[in-house]
Image 1 (cartoon, rainbow, N blue to C red):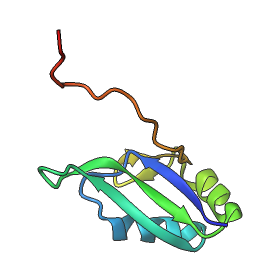
Image 2: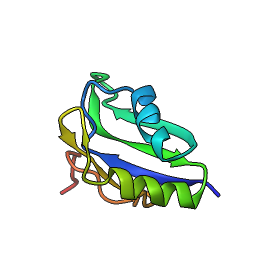
Image 3: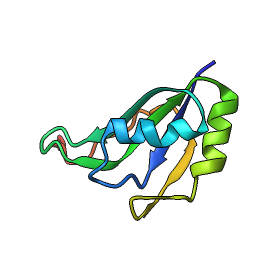
Length: 94
């Protein structure tokens, strides 16, 4: 079963293809996505990689967590579901 990983510390110039290629050293990468700002299109410096199996995901965490990619230290762990919470910056009724 595929397992999704959170990857932080991605160099801002990296693309989803760069991320996929980097993580392919740990096994078969089902998908890779660098998250970009919806207005500027610039990378936010994090993304998600989906490995084809749990074993490959565990290997990727072991190989890449704390490693260097383009001069930045990667943080790699199992992705957690997004939690719904209050959004900041909105108008409040009084």
